[in-house]
Image (cartoon, rainbow, N blue to C red):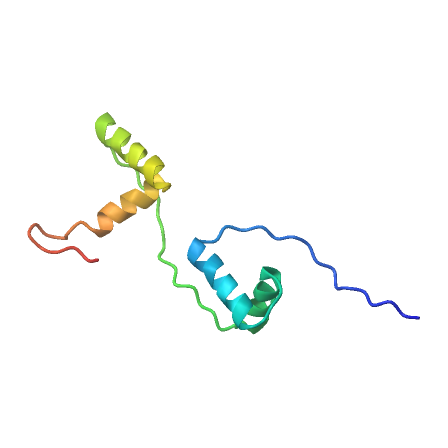
Amino acid sequence: MATRTRPASAPLTFDLPLSLIDRIETCRKGHAFKTASEVIRHALDKFDFDGYRPDHDPHRQISVRIGTKQRAVLKRHARKNGASVGELLRLALEHLPARPGKKARS
C-alpha cells in the first residue's frame, strides 16, 4: 500500500500591511481556500515574475545638518507614527513645493 507524501515545505515569515492581510482573507474565501498559505502558494504560482519590472527610484545617501530641536521633533514623530526618520524626511521633501507659493505634489 503506497502512502501519499506531502511536498516539503518550511515556514516563511514576512511583514505585510493590514490591507494585504485583509486581501488574503478575501481571496481565501473567494477561492474557497482553507488557509492563507494556500492563497500565497496560488498567488506565487499565478504571478509572472519573468515579466515583472520593479519601479526602482535610485537612492543615494546624503548628510545634512539639523538642529537638536528639529531632530528631537523628527524622532518623536517617527516613534509616534511607527515610521522611520528617513520615511518622514522623504515625506516632508515630497510635500515641499519647488518654489514658494506653488502647490506641492500630492
